[in-house]
Amino acid sequence: MNPMTNVKNVLKLSERELGGNSKTSWHDQYKDSAWVFVGGLPYDLTEGDVICVFSQYGEIVNINLVRDKATGKSKGYSFLCYEDQRSTILAVDNLNGIKILGRTIRVDHCEQYRAPNADMSKIDEVTAAVRIGGCAPTVPDIKIEPTIKQELEIKEKTKDRKRKKEKKSKKKKKKKSRSSDSDSSD
Image (cartoon, rainbow, N blue to C red; front, side, top):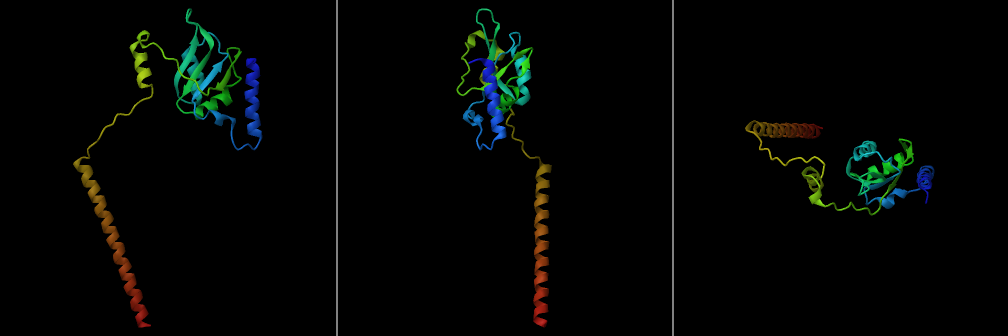
């Protein structure tokens, strides 16, 4: 099918969904995949250029800009993986059919895409570390022992709460005794 026809079909689906009272979205079929296909890219774009355009709808955790093995030049299509699947819906709805450097791009969901297994011996150490550990920042697990000052503050707060409860209970007792005294005098 002609790529422009695909773009128009996806746009029609989105318009029909917005105009109608459909309870489910056509995007629901792809709820288990955070991958997006991008076709019609200008051949001189790099991975960084594609990330700049598509990261406005979410954090991109993986990109596969398909290149010719002999020349290393882009073939004009790519696969992107977002950190959150909901970002794929935004990207498909908002970026499908836009023009980049005079070329209309096609953005669509990928239901069962798997990233290619790259030969780890041919890549540098930094890339290998990113592929193994991911690119998202990690928060170290640090157990902080409370200081003596913090422990004292916690103890004071609990004592204050106990005092307040005792005062409230005394007030209630006084009110009950007053009401019972007034009832007995009648």
